[in-house]
Image 1 (cartoon, rainbow, N blue to C red):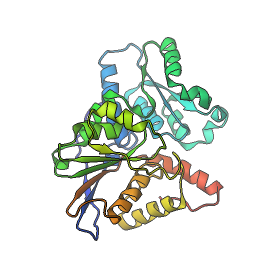
Image 2 (image 1 turned 60 degrees about the vertical axis):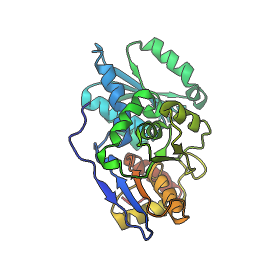
Image 3 (image 1 turned 30 degrees about the horizontal axis):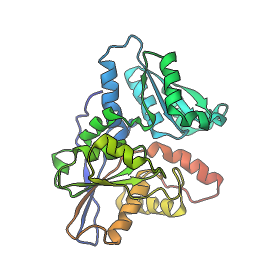
Image 4 (image 1 turned 90 degrees about the horizontal axis):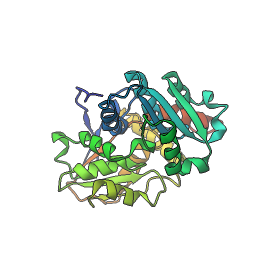
Length: 301
């Protein structure tokens, strides 16, 4: 993988308060290896390929609508690497073809193994089994979060981002928050908006970042993957107002909560805030399928 020779735009979102808010469009970095996924995979994959494996093979984990699964599959196709996705939920075994994320991943050459949720939760045992079966494979953790990922997230920061007081991102497995925290300027505070109800996330981020310059506001709406009517309306209104598409699981929740904090007076007058659009737009089609079955308002594309 090479660092893309493109300049990621920073878009100012006008506010009626004496606060500046910008959105960094990391979602534009690659059409399929989207946003922070590109940077979390960057050093994981390059370090592995530097070993010159005879038969390069990547294995990773995710749910049926996982952005990470989609990104690894796309990366495998682009670099001619065999990929295997360990998918949470054995009920998908006979119906994955109807799932837009998994169908697209399969089209890009990814094979699947479907495991029970109980088996999936025990990542240590599952990883050990895979290491014995595939001793020469690169096994990437769920969400791509590890120390290599943290190093990759460093590339989301640049001379352009140094003047901001606050850096904001959605937080799932914690790798992006940890990377921003670790490499932020001394005057910057990092807000990782939690889209998962996971009390272990703080310690995971702290272990990876080794700094205490971050907070983790709740933004999960009661659970990972839960899509409320309020969230759908925010995403649709945001696109209408700013012309920018958001996803319902990560960036949509993050920005909605961020706007709530701005309105509540959380940020001092004169603050300069940078939020990161981390992609995940491939998940909208699957989300809309579920919303359609529930006879609910859809996310407009």
